[in-house]
Length: 297
Image (tube, rainbow, N blue to C red):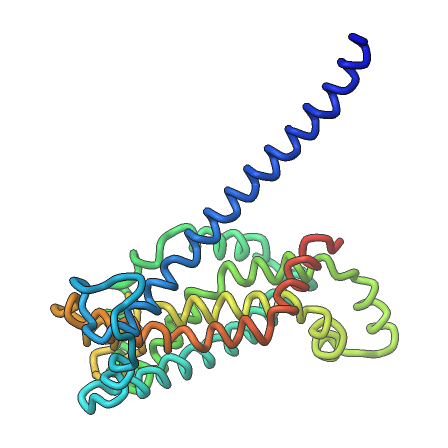
């Protein structure tokens, strides 16, 4: 009887441990989900709160409505959609140029051997160690002086801001792209060279289609980083009509944030739509890029 009881106790103890482990995992999962979703729920609640102040903010507002959205759109002194368009335009152009320059630079570093190649790669990585905030004053002065020569590329211009974003996004993206490109077999290049293909034809027709997963990942990261930037845009843009959406919302609510909390929340929700659309449209490519990048080679 004692041996039977010992045999029956072991499965029961193992079952209890499994149940305890499942319960712990569920508790942790629910806590993490609540921790992630709660800020979004609070913003949605604030945008539907008709009073629009922090003093009356609550998770479930009384008499919810779309007054904050109407005030956001219907205010003639608040060009919200102009700022929204500025952000989308600047971010889209920056992302396209970043992908183009990054891909070609990574192809050169990955496939060609030239003098100073290793030194340049180390220099690119070393530059990324320093925070971008350290270069704000230098960028301001450079664009101010550069604007005296070419006004369209100087201070308070979208083109000048795009150039600054390109310089900040190139370094780490080149390393990511090069690392992914190194996993593509060089036999493809050698076979194409034997058939008489040029380096550009190899890059455009053979290598570039294989880079689609990492292109999607880098493009999304570049889009989100540029779209959500505030400090650089606030420093380099001075005209109200040229503001991005992040700068415009901060300027509009400056000094009266507690009174315009509802309008700010409404603007934040509308501003998040491009990123949400990109994630919904490209979610398969995002997962594919991350998984293929992890197992390739």
